[in-house]
Length: 141
Figure 1 (spheres, rainbow, N blue to C red):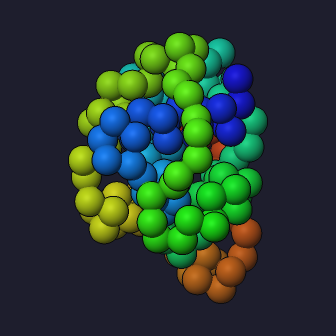
Figure 2: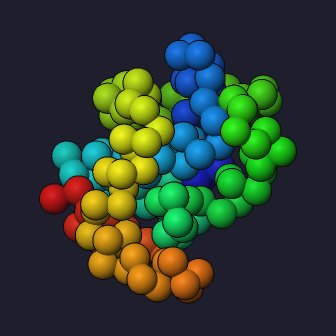
Figure 3: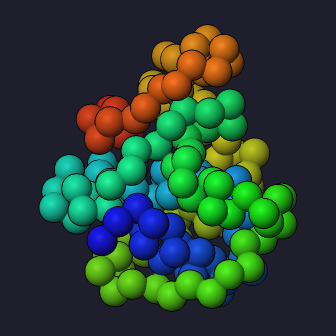
């Protein structure tokens, strides 16, 4: 299990909800994982998924490799074949809690979380800020 497989799971679930853009994918990954951590802590599933950290970018948390993997779709929905992964089914309710939120709401909410908010000056100067699992846990207390 990896962050890439988790992203593919989210893309596949999103296809049943009208699709997902790259920008929204990044936020849904963040909120789904963060809310799961809030309820279950940093457990084996989280450690298996979090093989690549989020980075704090101007529009909120981003998984760099996923951003570049889906960059070609621009602001449009990601159009590539993916499948759900039953290993991630326990996170589906957290996905469902966020999938219908507007992208502006997701961005604003991510900017108000401690990791992004406390590093906003550095982020706007393009300094690389990495989210540890403890940062995610703290963001969702």
